[in-house]
Image 1 (cartoon, rainbow, N blue to C red):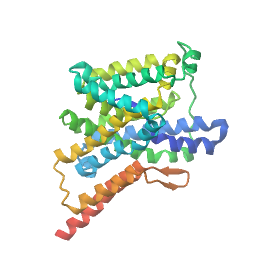
Image 2: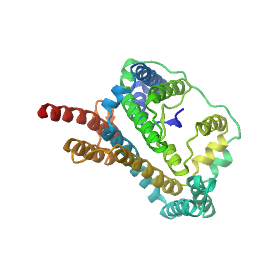
Image 3: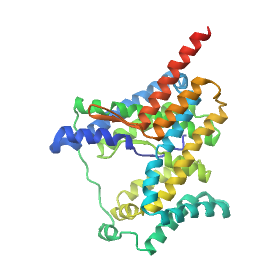
Image 4: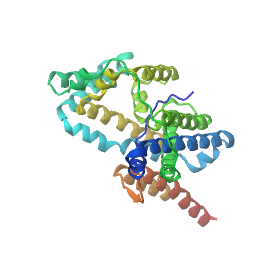
Length: 344
């Protein structure tokens, strides 16, 4: 009932790298997959708790000022990635971004809704004509093949490395579901537990299948914002299509060959749209920024997340999204409690 697409999560990269390094070449990836499975199980249990206890405690922990901030950080934290691709080939990036804008402005109906995709195609084709697309990998790839699998192994030392990822996934899921709710105008709080459970189950299956852990994809929220298509049927079709396409290395090679400039143009639009959805949560919830607690928490968390403040502790590096989430969640509760105690 929640229009959301699950894909590989960047939050797993840190602990996977640490797991591979600590476990050695012999069983590093297998141990990392065990950590992914562990993360999925914990997240599914959190979702089950939300279903049983209701969304009230989540709303208490994550009021609009916090969720809006998290959504904005999720989008704007990716600005560096968008810039990295954009600056690799500015001409193609500008052509792609301009194509998205022009198609959206002059088209109506279906064409307008897929302006993001069409803009990407335009950028890809122009780059191909200019000779900026490496086709060697496409030519060498087979049309059909089955993926290879690795059996997970479980080590407590490795699994502990993945615990912080659970916090990130909860924040991303809650923030994304809130963003979808704001975008569609539907109250999806009663589906929050199901969304967390679904991501947990998907992450568990991904780990057993040799893949990366999953999260709700912010990019698809941007696509929905641009297309105004919120049907869950589209995600069923996308899911089945993704499974079928995963059996074609040729298709994967075509995607891998997407020019950096085209990706930069598309991501500039999409990631910006995601960030603006966070502001929309603030506006529609009428967050009072004359309140010093709201202002300080949101401002500090945004800077920490956008600038990607990192903190390394042992084998794990807490990224900007994690740290901004901690500041937003914990900072709001502590400062709000102090403020309420003072007013009594």
